[in-house]
Length: 245
Ligand SMILES: [Zn+2]
Image (cartoon, rainbow, N blue to C red; front, top):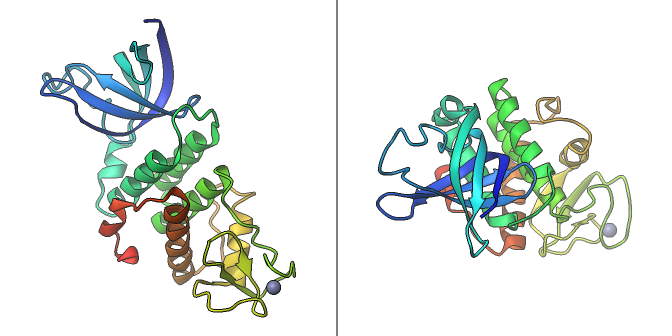
């Protein structure tokens, strides 16, 4: 049972039995890690607030024999986002982001970008960046990291460029210009197409200055459907956000 350690963000935890918790960690170097936190329910000071959602901590753990889970032996809080996350205007957006990571990112994924993305979204929210914009930025990058983002500059069918508007294909794999479109419903305006491109270069706290809140809402709804389509799942936490109901 070799010891190992990692920096990680807590994405959620649930009871394993009356004494112990299972915690799901987004690590900075090995994707999602499922960890037993022994005694976390029996004694509240065993881990303190280390296991609160989106706490960033340094965790020391050992591997369980079946290699599917680890057991946390100790840990320390590096950054607590608890006050930020618990605010009513934030909590459900962050629950949704945690659920998206847990349902989309495979175990042992070595790509460090998901961790950096989540960390930069948390920091931007600390700096008062708009929460709906952050959810959009997050969704676009989740699609990009997983190789599911379409090219926002070109029609999937006729390859025409400089589109003034577009419609998302019903299999979510590309966009169509006005000539190629049939009965596709999800409309994306020229400025919305530019926003998608813009996120490739800029960090989330640099908000795209011309984007309207209706456009943020439109793209958030479109990309949530696209993520659900590719991951073949439904995100339960969306029911708490009015823009998805
Ligand atoms: Zn076309």
